[in-house]
Amino acid sequence: MMQAILSEMKYTIQVTVPGNVKKVSNKDAVTSEDKKKVTLKSSMKDIADKNVSTELKINY
Amino acid sequence: MKKIAIVACGFFLLSTLTGCIDFFEELIVNEKGGGHFVRKLDMSEMMEMTKTLSQTAKDSSSVKAEAEGPSDQEQADDMGRSMLEDAEAIKKVNGISNVKVTQDTINSIYAIEFDFNNDVALNNALNESGSKKPKADNIYSISKSWVTRMEHNSVDDIILPGMKKIKMLLK
Image (cartoon, rainbow over the protein chains, first blue to last red):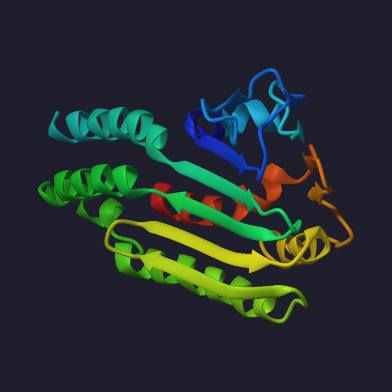
């Protein structure tokens, strides 16, 4: 039951930087059109199972 | 037959309501390396569905006893207390200011946010909240042209306070 719950929980990380984003390490992360914001969306189960990385290296 | 229908209804709701729990973490970095941090748990959609399930159970006297348990308000109060404890600890961290806790117990939206002077203050504040595990974990690193969020601890720090409430809901 808890595994099922975890798989459906959404987890969003959003980072806004003062300059334009030049490079993001995480392939699942999305950069906004204005190049100031990076968003990573995933489920708790994927994070717990290490299917998705929550590591973000943002160069701006 | 009625009881079976209610149990089936319960399983259906549980399978759908869990998709409505949102954990949100936001970091806004300024040019000086400081910024603003927000951590939010939004269970508004889930609570709405839970109320429906609760009402369905109450409508059947045969499962009335199973429906009894902590009230929504008690569960919300528990979550609120946990966040207030975190906020009090975070307020004492050097380089942290404007600590704000949002407790929308009606819609089940809980948030904690604060300003930080640099990444050291931010990491110290984050280590003061959540699972209370051994400290010295650096979650964020901020330099002139880089922001790095480390891989570890995201689940533990975010999910434990939320899971406490969710487990209560599943009782």
